[in-house]
Every structure is written in C-alpha cells, then in structure tokens.
Amino acid sequence: MKKEEVDGFLFLGNHLALDLVNTRIIPERDSVELLPDTVALEKWLLAAGLVTSTHGARLLRRWRDSAEAQSFLEELRRFRERLRAVVIQREAGEAVSARFLAELNRLLEKYPTRIALSAAGGKLQREVLFEPATPAEVWAPIAAATADLLTEVDPSRIRKCESCIMHFYDVSKKSSRRWCSMNICGNRVKVAAYRQRQRADG
Image (cartoon, rainbow, N blue to C red; front, side):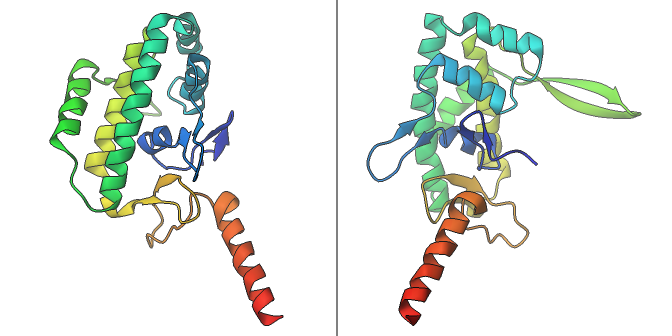
C-alpha cells in the first residue's frame, strides 16, 4: 500500500493524474503550491515512484537547474490547472472538451510511453521504461496517466473530499469513500460530529 505522504507530498488520489492535481492545494483563501521550483518537481517524480533507478535520479539532477526544466515546470503547472477543470467536470458528469482532448492527443503522440517485457519467475511482465533525459520527456507518464483517468476510470468514482479540496479515485468495493484520507479528514469530521453531539446532549 502506497504511503499517503512521501517527502512532503500527498498521495491520496489513487491515481497519478489526481496526485498531480493535488500538488496545488486550494483552500478557501490562499493556495499552496507544492511544485514551486524544479527541485520540488524532481522530488515529486521520485516520491511518486515515476523515477526509481539510480540512473534516472542522476538524469533528473543533471537537468534540474536548467532553463528548459523551468520552462517545462511552468507548462506542467498550466496543464495541471486545465486537468483540474476537467476533473471537476467529470465529477459533475460533464463531457471533456474537444480542446483538452486535442491537447492530450498531441502529448500522447509526441511523448509515447516506452514499454519493455521482462521474464520474472517464469512469467512475462510488462514494464514501463521511464528515465527522462530531458524535462519534456516527463510528459510521457503524465499524458498516459491522464488518458487512463479519462478512459479507464468510472467518472462516478472520481470525487472531491467532503472535508477539503483533494480529489481522489474511489476504489472501495461499495464506492462509499467520502474523504481523501481517514487519517487526515475522516477522523477530523468524526471528532467534530462527536463534539457537536456532546454539546447538543449537554
């Protein structure tokens, strides 16, 4: 089971595309940007498990401080906000715009996901190859995850937490998940309800 928090990032979405959306936390007033710079982007790629090899981590460090990485990060943040709008539309039962689909198709065509087969324990396994030599190559897993969210995930199971602004994919058997996390929001809501009952009884 994946940890809910890794290196300061929250992984509550049960889906990479939603975890990307959740890298900007938008409370009632000021938003909190979890990807303010390319160092944070590098940390997020590692924390999300997208880059797992030592060689891949070295490649990240190599382009970390480049103008190309900064430009990519700005593009990624703009894409994230367009994706957020799409997620909110999906939660409301609305269709995805043709404009967003065209943008996503361009990314999928330009940055395809590389796959390799490996034999482990007598069984063939499919493995995604991702070691980004350039910042732009990060589009490959982002675009693939977004396409998966839009085609493979039941829209009725994409939800916003009842207590905060996090979005998540509900994979519970009864489709009854209400909070981003029982540890973060679930217990807080239950404690608040308990205190309210106590005041009412008193």
